[in-house]
Each structure stands twice: as C-alpha cells, then as structure tokens.
Length: 382
Image (cartoon, rainbow, N blue to C red; front, top):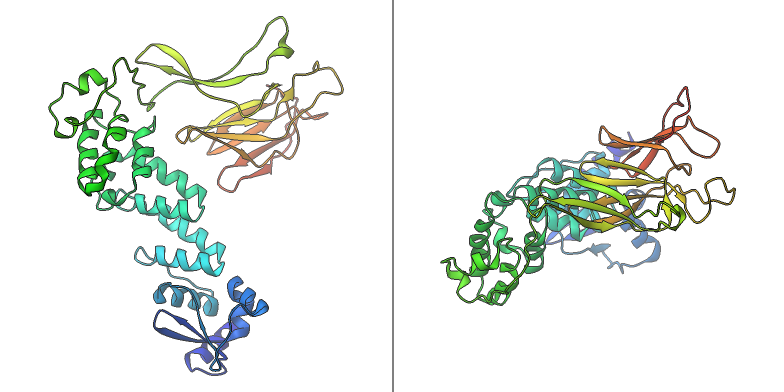
C-alpha cells in the first residue's frame, strides 16, 4: 500500500524532506504525508507558522519524544499502541497535533482502566482537555470510592479547590463521616501553607458542630465552630421527584418546576434544583445512570387547544452529582404529553408529536444524539 511504501522510505531515510525535533530527538519525515494526515502540520505548512531552517528542521512543543514517535507511527501505519505508561503523554501530544479521534481513544482507555490510584490524575486530564464524559465518570468514581482514593499516592498533590469540591459534594460516599478529619489532616500536613485552608475544609464535614467541638483531635484545636448551624446530610441514597408548582384553578399560571429530594434525617422534602426554563408543562421525565432527563413539553401561556401553542423539541440533562444542568441535543421533532422512559442507558420517547402519535426515538448519552425507532402500531401518549 501507499502507507507501507512511505513507511519503508522513512525507515531508510529515502525522500524525506522535513525533520521534526521533539525534545532532543530528530524524526525524518515526508512533508506531504504530514500535511495530509495531521491537522497541526497541515495548518503549519499552509500558513508558514514555522520558519524552517536551511536544513528543513522544525521544532515543536515540549512533548514526549516517545509519544510523538507513537503518533508518527500512526500516521505512517494507521496503527496506534496505547498503554498505561504512555496514555497521558499520547493524549497531550495528540491534542496539540489535532488528533481528536486519538484524544477520544485515550479518554476511553483511561476510563476502562480507572482505579483509586489514577482517578485523580485522570480527572485533572479530563478537566484540562474538556473531556466531559471522562470528567463525569471519574468524578463519580472519586465520590463513590473516596475512602480508597484518599489513600492513593496522588491524593496529597490535589489542589485546595479540588479537595474542597470533593468534600462539599452532597454525594460524597465515606464509611464514617468522622474519618474525613484524618483525611483533611493528611492533606493539610503535606505543606505548611495549607493550614490557612483548615477552617473551610472542616466546615465540609457533615457532623454537628457541637459534636465536633467536643472531639479530641489535633486539627480541631485551632478551629472556630459556629453555633446553631444546620448540617445537611449527604445524598447517597434519596428519593428524588420532579414537581411543578400548579394552580388548580388557573393551570396556565403555573410557571415553576423543581427537582425535590427527601431528607431522611430531618423527615422532610427539600429542593435540589429548579428547572432551567419556566412556563412549560407536559414534558417528559426519565432517569438514566442517576441523571435526570427532561424532554420536550408545551408552553402554558395559551390553552392546549390553541393553534398558537409552542411545542418544544429541546432537551436537558441534570447531573445530580455535579448539581448541574446541561442542554443536550434536541429531539428530531417537537413533542408534548409523550411517554418517556430510561432503559438500557438510553432515553426513550414515544408518541405525541404534532399530528403523529406513533413516532418513537431514543437518545444515547454517550454520543449526544437521537436515533429513530420503528413506528408503533397504535397511538401512545403519556
């Protein structure tokens, strides 16, 4: 094949017309193949971002020569080897060179091999390179396995902002809340400048301050406790409902929808979040992987029988653990009063779109896209 011929020429240094320097290593390459295969070099050659020296030498960023060699092999052979030792360096170099498919492959590799020793570094990588799915999954892993994560070698290297975010999460899962005192002590003791954060970190421990103040623990001696502070419990296992503030006499005046949860310690319901929109009803609700999905709906500014009513195809995802709304890809058609259900890691919607009661489709959170299903044999509505 053409690639095989180019690779053979490269191995024998035949017809190479450009040299790439990474760290202290020189790679002899064919400019035409780099231009055709790599977005970074295509842009560089086209706009002359690099001023080549007389000997056709180009120096690129401070990346691993091992990682660049793997990516160069990918250009010449269409094959790539990713290992636990090289995945981070390959991801960094691939992102710089514009290989989005390889960045995605590295993200998938990290996700498949996630554990308590590497999850913190994987989360930082995901945040740095905007790998949203990896960030979400590693964040969930950290919260679910924090007892083990806090014992990892990388734990003391995390930033104050990251630790504060973890300890503040309503969904942090720990065997005993009091064990967090030792975790905070371990992190603070790692560097003398961290003592200034002690007060705020202790506030994240979900134990009544009257109880904390009576404990004999060395890190509590310099902490000032507030009186009559209501401590909110973690939300590891709760009942969550979607509610709409409805006026039975004037339903069109209903404007607000909330997600509420049941506080088992205080035996009461509390608001988790409000919807990112108002004046809407008859939307679909589904739960997939503990995330809440809202689909479609109809505006309630006018009666349902009014031909001027507004029907929506937009959809939203609420990540419960991140407490964050995100607008996802809209449905192919606007719907209201339709049946919605979470099944097999997907969101299924069936029925009422305008003039069509049998239409069905499903949403795949992995690729943020909707897919058509075969039409039903009868009318369906919620």
